[in-house]
Length: 249
Length: 307
Ligand SMILES: Nc1ncnc2c1ncn2[C@@H]1O[C@H](COP(=O)(O)OP(=O)(O)OP(=O)(O)O)[C@@H](O)[C@H]1O
Ligand SMILES: [Mg+2]
Image (cartoon, each protein chain N blue to C red):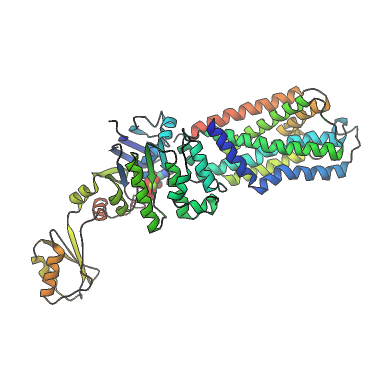
């Protein structure tokens, strides 16, 4: 437990020292939100965004996107880099359980994502007049499920991908796919059928739905919850399995 | 008393490469034990199996009474390691690294004294990526010692250190041993092994060629004294064969002469040379060193590529 705490504190400091990731997770969504608001204004259009005002729709979509980005963009790069460079060996030799290391990384990822998500929500509400959550507790719970699920996905990618470079490449690709198709870009209703089908398969689409439900007072989206919980459990299980294999040899 | 390390019939293969074929040795508590051998002879693989970082294919290993294959986590808390290949996060600072490794060891020992001891006080706030090679190396040794371990494994501890830093490192390792810690030292420096190690094992191609104190290895494998000097290629030096104690006189590289034998060879050869009117300015004798014994044992050939 003390190891986990010490590791988490150090990893948090290390994360903050990396300007590029901080920008991707914290600043970019804000910029895109600003642009989209300029493009779409705040008038509801009954044919798109589920009939919601664009800012309400995008706020929950961006909260989900920030959590997803933190998970797939920064975490795998760090973990794959640790494996590649021998940092993992160094920690392992000092009796740091890989689980503690993964736990520290996931915690830091969730913390950073939360800062980004809160920043974004406050900005949406204060500057762009987005609605306040109807069900505060529900939003926090939905957000946490999302953030932890994507952190687990990131941990798995970090142990599957061979190098930090590969992780970086895939992370950036996923980031753009998530942003363009996961509900945070053009409204799904105007996407071509093929792309719309891709969007339906993206976990981030479900994450947006999951956060939007309690936020707009529409209740929980059961399918979305199921998808994210399954993703969480599967990623944790596969990561544990990978870890066990990695430590032998 | 339970042995610090017990290795018997260790074998480890990587795919089709046999890294360690058959290695056995024991390390007594409180001694500095050296592992010597050419590149690729299996030293690192052996100590990684000892630390439970790799799983042996065959053989029996006990470290401080524990089996590294099944008790790895408990064992690693008792063992400090400086690994040949490892790294820290690029942006982690020296002070933070020591603090972290102190925090993750069982009793959270003090760490600040290590900054001074290992000459890192001025680098306390320097990121790992910005350290020089020797500074990194010193940090890794300091990290190996921070948990106050009962056994420390140092894999090429002084590689990359300047001569002064090497001597400082030697003194510190001796101090660690004097406080009761057992040390396993992998090294390519024979002066280091001779100075520090109570006993050494020489490995080649994944097998132990010899084990013993440095003095015993020298006596067994290179007991002879050597005298060297240069003389014109046409000078006849065969008369030296008649000098007492001389066993062999050989020409090397045209002008060099190598006299081998035993006893007070330098004085006798010098006397004989002066009598014949030869006064080489570079006459030098060497008592056999661990390096001579090592080269005699391993055949002086590099293992990589040859294997
Ligand atoms: N991870 C690995 N995968 C495949 N082969 C390996 C691996 N590690 C080591 N080997 C091989 O095993 C053999 C022994 O390597 P090892 O690192 O134990 O040697 P060493 O004695 O420590 O050498 P050096 O003095 O160069 O450090 C070498 O032939 C090496 O190529
Ligand atoms: Mg080695």
